[in-house]
Length: 460
Ligand code: ATP
Image 1: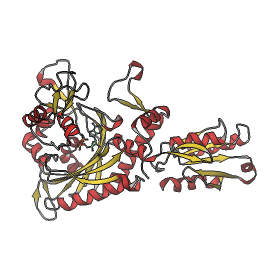
Image 2: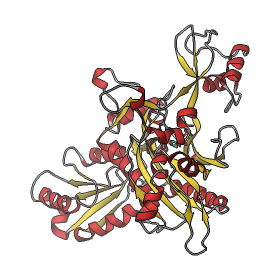
Image 3: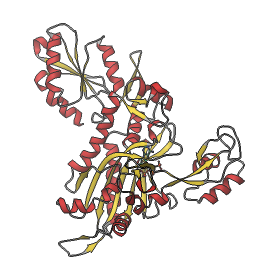
Image 4: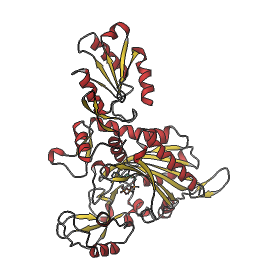
């Protein structure tokens, strides 16, 4: 089924239900920064936990890491970010606005200009009459120049050039510089991976599309180290694994595809890159995740710049080499937006409109709501007891206000997959009703069996 939601609606919905707020809203907000509210924080945590579960807990060959955001500045020289982590910036002299030159050209002409130099982009903008300032239609642009996306800061009290530090623009480098530490302190053997989740920062020229592109965001990256020569096969393996992760979590396959990166868009050191894309209703096919064959580029560069020996010796064969790296890299913020638009539905049920988020139970912010049919004892006491017994295992919600119908609607909107109601019959038969969000069907379950029943329903 195609999505039924546009950007305005999803932004309003996210605010109304406490998924995502504009940051610093009482001060008028700050562009491109968002805060995750009570439901949003649960949903984003679930996405990260599902990723961690599949990447780390379910595997014998991957370990986790949590590295610092502020690293030695030489890390970013070695990785090539200081010299080359640039977007092409163009300023309109009529409106004073700044744009990404590639986006400006592509939107006006449909040309694919990925990888062209500043001079080439400047020439296209000057010559092609179709390219205009989207704000005022002006055609007076300054020459295109590269703009480094790394946020700079200073460590210590003196703001001098030797104290410049960067907020990391990707989590991957924290993994590469710890390659040797992990090798020496855990029992890993190539092929193995190191996984990390954390904040990254990019001073994007044109952030936008809500939480799709922001300047501060999170990344979930895993660097999988393999013997050179086996890299292509492993790359293929991770493309399939990662694609299936989305399907298992219920994303509509019609809105999901793999796309081979072109030579121009691929990082110069990567031999192959495949994006997993989602068809957003407001932006079309856009990258959720990139899976790259980074070769031995990063480890080799860090070996050169740091002087540390980053070769690996296979104890069984005696072979020594710098491992190749296959990297699935994804942003949970983007993934959350995809899950939200994919799950959002407006349905007509018995003459009534309901908004429902058909999220996979593992992704849903609240797993189950517990309702007493009435606020009065002893029904309420039984419901409260059930809630207290189960709340340490899942995120639950207790609600005793309003009609049962209204309480269902509230949970449907929040994406809560199951509602458990304690009614008058419960007092006699010790059974409760579990109602399914999607089918709206109800089953009677003995109160003692609710724990196991919910567990199996949630694990899907
Ligand atoms: P894009 O082309 O959209 O800028 P990218 O190819 O530069 O993305 P990578 O460097 O491959 O992105 O980063 C890996 C993942 O991190 C992306 O697939 C995306 O999910 C996430 N990501 C990157 N930049 C942002 C951002 N500004 N806001 C939110 N998520 C981001």
